[in-house]
Amino acid sequence: MSGDEKAYLFYMLILLFFIGGGFLYGNREKLSTTLMQAAIWVLIFMGVLIGYGFKDTLQQQFAPSRAVQNGDAFEIVRGADRHFHLTLKVNGQNIRFIVDTGASDIVLTREDAARVGIDVDNLAYLGRASTANGVVATASTVLDQIQLGDVVDRNVRASVNGGEMFGSLLGMAYLNRFSEISIRGDRLILKR
Image 1 (cartoon, one colour):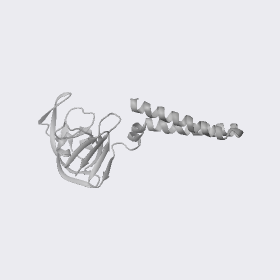
Image 2 (tube, helix red, strand yellow):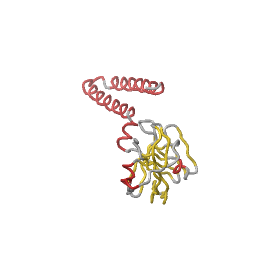
Image 3 (cartoon, helix red, strand yellow):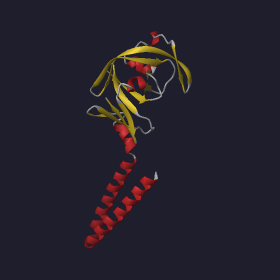
């Protein structure tokens, strides 16, 4: 818990103490009913605090890698793993990417490539890429269509990784299609 979060929690507890004390004082004649109502409000307050504390986890569970479109801009919230994830429709299939500004290309795992209709067993893995796990073989391909919100790009070059990957990467070949890329706190903003 960061210093700001501790200060926020302390502030909320003091606020609860004063509001609760005033409520109890005002209803001192019917104390049993008042205590029951106060207990209910404490439970509600604690539920809100817990929900706020786990907001990133809950958001990833209920709305993973969603981009919110506002005009010509897309806003992506940083995931619980501290990476930006983005789900794009590739050849009609939803594919979850890790946004990777260190990657040159769009790089699909073999599994994701097969899901979008690429025959991964008949690709020519002639390229080489240096990764954190060493040098891997890659194959070039062209994706018929990539869609983010209402923006559709056609005939997009990509690579298929011949090795093991933890997820497909959305590299600069795609990100450069945007006029502006910025990170503001836990939000990535892509502007067309």
